Amino acid sequence: MRRRLLIAAVLAGGLPAGVAAANGLVLGAGAGSVRSVQDVPRADAAVVLGALVHEDGTLSAMLEDRVAAAARLYRAGRVPKVLLSGDHGRRGYDEVGAMRRRAIELGVPARDVFTDHAGFDTWDSVVRARKVFGVQRAVVVTQAFHLPRALFLAGRAGLDASGYVADRRSYGAESGRVARREVLARVKAVGDVFGAPRFLGPLIPITGDGRESWGPEPAAATAAQDESPPPSLPEADARLPRTAGAIAVQLADVSGRLHEAVDAWRRDGDPRTERAPRELGLLALRQQRLLLHLVRRRVMASRVLPLLPAELRRDARDVLDAKRALAQLLPPGGVPRSKLRTSRPLPPDALRRFYDRGTKRFGVGWELLAAVNFVETAFGRVRNTSWAGAQGPMQFMPATWRAYGLGGRIRDPKDSILGAANYLHANGAPRDEARALHHYNPDSRYVRAVRAFARIIRRDVRSFYVLYSWQVFFKTPDGTVRVTDP
Image (tube, rainbow, N blue to C red; front, side, top):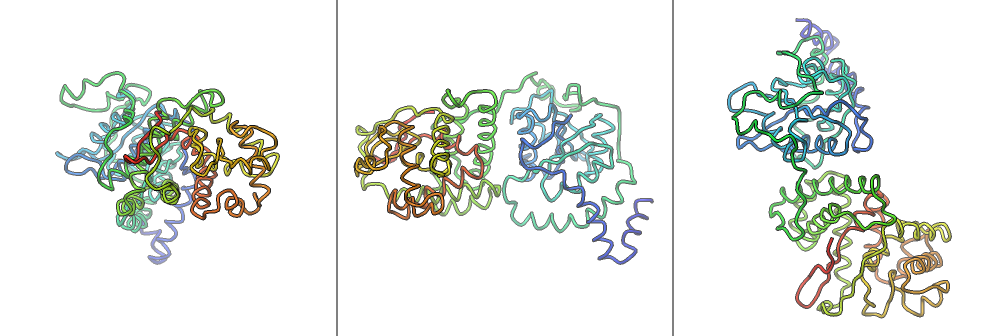
C-alpha cells in the first residue's frame, strides 16, 4: 500500500513532472558505474542481474554480456564470488541455471558461483543479496541503461555497491525498447524501496560454497568439480565462426581476455626481458585472424561492426581501414616464401625504452614511432630488405640513413628507432605527423595506416602489447601464409 501511495504522491504534481522527479532521483545513483575492470573496487561478490533466456536455454545477448563481465571481474581478482540472480519461478524457465552453466564455462569455479532463484526483479535481487547471502560490498553487473536504477535500489537495500557496465556490443532495436521502459521502471523503483521481496529464506553466506545455493538438480549436474578449468585457449589455426553474430561475440570475448592477459603480464611478468606469454600470443593470434577475415569480407564486416562494443568497434574500424590500405601497397604476386626472413623481436618494454628516447630527444610521440615500427617490420620480426631496397627495423633507404641515422647501424633497433625519430622530426613531427609520414613513405595509404595504428595505441597502451603479440602474415604466390608462431 505504501508503495502505491508514494508513487501516487510522486505523480501528484502532474504525470510529466512526477516522472521527471523520480527519474532524476534514480539517475543520481549512476555515478558509481565504471567500464574498466581496473577501476572496479574490490567487493564481496559480483551481483549479476537476470534477463531473458531463450527457449533453447541460451542466454540473450544482454544476459550473455552480464555473465561474461562478471567472469572478467572474477578472473581479474576484483571479486571472489559471483552471485547470479534471476527468475526461476515457473516450470520450464530457469534464468539462474543457464547463467550458472555459462559462468562455469567461462572459468569461474563451481564453488564460487552462487545462484538466487528468487531474484524476480531488481529490488528482490539486491535485498536478497544483502539479507539472504550476507553480501555487504557488491559490484552490480548489468547494462548501462539499468545501472542507475540497480545502484539506487542497492543503496536502499543496505549494500555498499558500485556498478560495472556490461555492454559489449550494440543491442539493436532492443536498446530503444528497454530505454523507453526504463523511464517508468525508475518511477516504480521509488516505490519499491518501501516494499519487501516476495521471498527471503535461510541465510546462505556468500563466503561459503556456492553449490549450496543451487537447489535440487540431477545428480550428474551437481557433481561439479572443486575447480573448473579456465576458459580454453584458441588453437592457432582453429576454424573461425561463420555468422556475423558469432564473430562479434568471439571478437569481443577474445579482445577482453587479451587486455586481461596484458594486465597480468605487466603486473606479474617482465615485458622488459620476456617474450609474450603463450596465452597472450594465442589470444592475439585469434583476434588478428578474426580481423583479417573481415578485411577481406567487407559485407560481413559491415554486419559485425555494429554488434561490437563502442571502444572495440572504433579500434576494429581503424584496423580494417589500415590493413586494407596496406594491402594495396604490396607488390603484385607477393613474395616467394623462400625469400622471407624473420626473427624474434626485442621484448616490448625494451622497444618502448627506445621509443621514449626518441620522444625525449626529438619530440616525436612514442606511439607514432611504435606504429611505424609495427607497419614496417612487425616490431623487427621481418628482416627482409624491401623490394625498394629499404633496410632495418624502421626500413630506411641507405642514402636517407646516411643523412639521418646519427652515425648508428641501420639494422640495430635502438639506432633505427632514433634515426626514424630524427627523420620524422626534421619533416614536421610532432606538429604535422601526416606531412612527416608522407616524407617517410610518399603514399597517402601508408600515412593513413600508420596514423590509424598510432591512434589505437594512444587510446589504450595495452593495445601496444596486443599488436606486439600479433604474428606475421605474408602474401606469397601461393596465397597468404602465417610465417611466425605465438
